[in-house]
Image 1 (tube, rainbow, N blue to C red):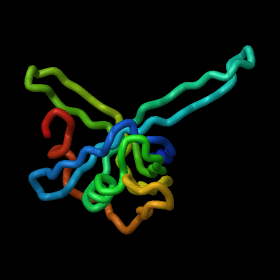
Image 2 (tube, rainbow, N blue to C red):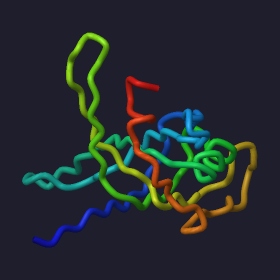
Image 3 (tube, rainbow, N blue to C red):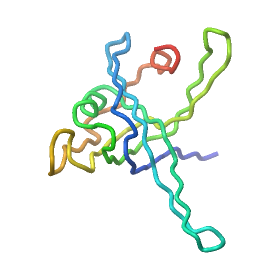
Length: 140
């Protein structure tokens, strides 16, 4: 059976990037993206809907996001869906679906700059091969 796991999103950050270092020394960043989905309902009325997406970025890409992005920044994110699962200290099982970014491209001005473009990021930042268990929510 063939499979395909790819996500491509353009949206605005709902908060400043949060970056931390895991025990292996890699940086991991969490972005919260708001993606608008406007459509007409069956009565022809415009409906505005916003989807909030959690995105994880790794290593140098995470550090660069922290440096240049802030709440409200517009970004293009390309990556794949990832399901994180963990158990809380109370023994409850939790899970979260998010996008693991392979590429984050800045579409607006960097924070603190009134105009111009920000540096873009692409395949120059390979994804780490380490196990994700170190960076699961609730365990960091």
